[in-house]
Image 1 (cartoon, rainbow, N blue to C red):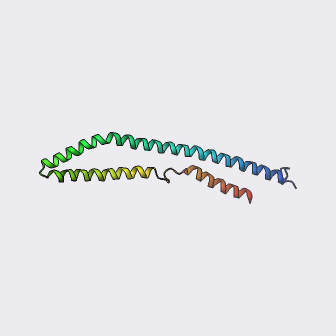
Image 2: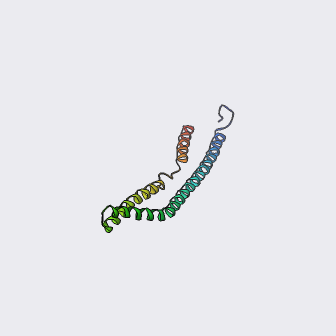
Image 3: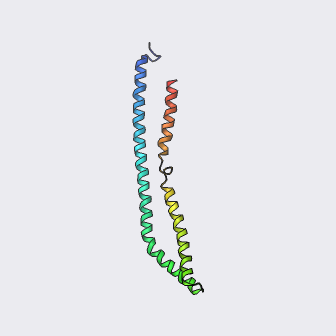
Length: 130
């Protein structure tokens, strides 16, 4: 049995399977490239967070002492002034840490382009099989 272009059905099926194999290989290459890019993005984010933390520590200590000193001059007792400045610093630190963690979440690092492409390929393969 032959098709309109003169090729037999087994030849057409063989070509379709070969093209499907190439398509799957291309999808793996795309996924590998995208995951590599996401890993690089995560590495840069971690580096920025770490670098910022190292530089922030001495500056933060000085600013907290200055704030506590200002509160003491304003009439608060030493322990209350230090507790207040420490509490504000803790709140800010927790906010920054949560933002950094959110940027490293699985959803942010998911290979979205590859997943969309695989879904499109799946739909195209279904159309070919019909």
